[in-house]
Amino acid sequence: MRIYDGSPRQDFEEVFRSIGARLDAMGMREVLLLEIADGFLVQGLAIEGAGQWSEALASMSKQTMTLRDDELSAFMDQSLARRGLGPEPAPDHYQSALRVIGRYLDSQKPRDVFFFEQDGSYVLRLLRSSQTGTHHELVEFTREDIAELVNQGHDLRAAAETPTIRSKA
Image 1 (cartoon, rainbow, N blue to C red):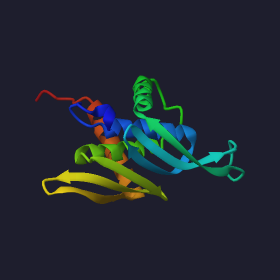
Image 2 (image 1 turned 180 degrees about the horizontal axis):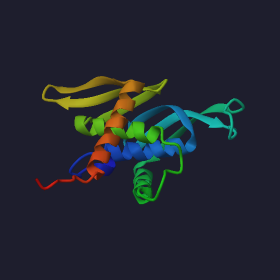
Image 3 (image 1 turned 135 degrees about the vertical axis):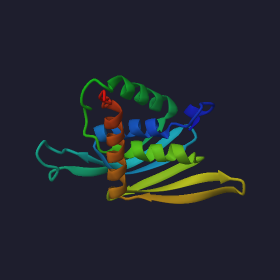
Image 4 (image 1 turned 90 degrees about the vertical axis):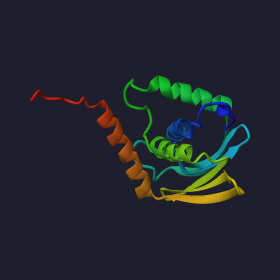
């Protein structure tokens, strides 16, 4: 990602978390995300006209948007400012899922990312560099994988927030 050139680490976790929050707020489904030179191209199905009680009367339309580096930086700043101020304003579906995928990407350090969602599972195509050159690698996260990774994150944060009580013996 260009916004992180020169940074000590890539931060896909925070970028994807912010994109996920945006997708949640928009009510997107079945997303496709493609890294481009100055940000990400995002496409998904948006639910339009859904009422409070049912999505049955809603219609779906494909929407495409380009999220440029400066917009991503603004999303990240807004996300950081909201943390700790209470519950998120939108349902948390993509925010958590994309955060854990971003964390995985940070550990892999890909040069390029493309992924799409199919029924709650995500297929990623990563461009990786090695001593033998560059190559593409496919990775899949099932719905169960995502749920497990999200729960692991919640457990780790809860353990970090719980003070250790030591007794005098």
